Length: 420
Ligand SMILES: *Cc1c(COP(=O)(O)O)cnc(C)c1O
Image (tube, rainbow, N blue to C red; front, side, top):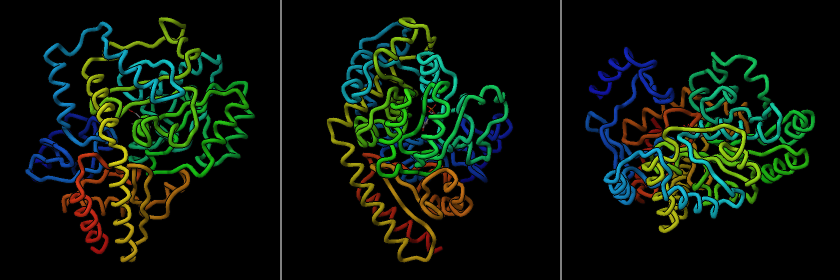
């Protein structure tokens, strides 16, 4: 990877850490991508890898899906930014409100971060209260209110509490551990008159993979209802993945507000937030909570996102990726059993994780995982053609483009790397 190394040396002089987003700064250097197609990503030195990082979640169809590509080409021919409403906004909004029972109205924005930032502002505006409650290790993007004990790159690089966020800004951000009903009940009850919302990833995908225990989300819903506090499910990862209607459909729990992103943009930047009409109508210009964006609802993101969701529905993609994930996880577990390494593998739908240590039930457990061993393993796998996310605190994904042969090859290489 000579060329990648040289490029990274250049990049380090021009961009902090040499990258545009922290988790990409793999030590000693990341590979630079030349192209990607289907289940494979190819670097500038001519190596190909089976990709389970998949851009951290959006690429459920794999890279460069033909249908999405053609739809984008068609849109390109008609221009790519208008600054006016387009018909596709309505079509996409109809589709989302049909798939998500809890969503009656939506607003399209540009990133998941923007969606959670706006949803929190809306919750505060609607309730007239200032405090919010998040889950330790939960990641909701990179804006001030949520950068305390934040997962993803913030945890990977040891800065879960970001510098540059005034204490005053996060004084109103409370936290409790995941899967802990008592702590949540206690904090919500104690702060109910000041608490606007609880925001959480229903399945935590940014502090390794942490799966909710039986009944936990239903309890969360009950506690927030009883205390008249809004519940925001951040489904930026789980939306259109756990089920077409996200974790809410999967677990049978409805949120007041939902944030979507990643898959929702089909590989182009997008964020969406939505919920009950009475809440959403408080958004400007129908209401007094301001939110705006030059690129919001842009034709290319809407086209890629809408085409992707339609493709998922028409090709029963979720069944396909879930089945392949199960096969893969079963194979990986067999390999672990035959070795003597303290590694665990778990999955939900098409999200899976290789834990160097015990399977966590909350953030403090996740921090006990051996992230150094994970990265050693990451490199062994990469050298043999498998690209896992470059951090123990990220989740692996399966795509529609992965073949049964890909899965078998992955199991074999995994076994080899465990024994090295
Ligand atoms: C990725 C992610 C975000 C942020 O989305 P961006 O598009 O990167 O801003 C927010 N919430 C969750 C759960 C995410 O995984």
